[in-house]
Image 1: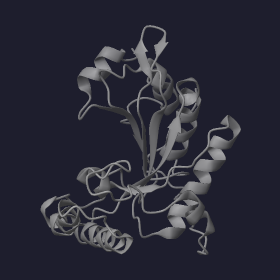
Image 2: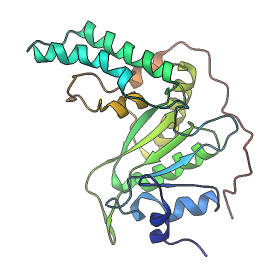
Image 3: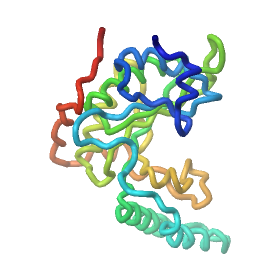
Image 4: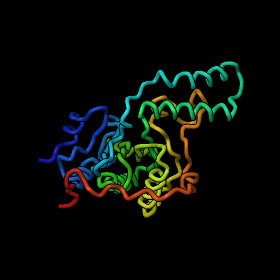
Length: 246
């Protein structure tokens, strides 16, 4: 018997409904498409790559906030003096934060796409399939659009497509191009930059964060222009067969 939405919500952890490979992927995607999931009760719907050798959304290391604080404190000190934060100081801070993330092994990050409620189901279905089969990034998640019976939320929701290492430019570019190709038939633009997970954990969100730091480290245009050797195709050998149809 297919699980009900209430059962899925009761069994979720961390506010996330995650595909656990206990039911065919196509059936799971249909059962938990964003429009059916109540945004008031569920934060994310998520799927991890089943391709051998790719991790989930965790960067592999354990995030610890304290080592990032000296770099952030230098920016806070400038702001507390009532001064503008020089661009050079921001760049130095960002590099120090990224170096700390490297030392912690917390190197995942994400490309983000903002989905209008009316197209979120179709866009997420394409992204979820590509992620599970290793054609996209190591993991992906989308915010629900369900607001009540036959009702949708009134604003765009974010979908995050993860890459395991923000230093792997070839892979960042490959995943970005693959995401853009998936979204093109739906006329969904991919314009948001690439954001390290460490920035999310630190609260570096939007341009109005208290340190006035950019929330992303690469723009779409910048990443598309990189002259990098093409990343090898995502691993094609799954850990277990994925039942997509029937």
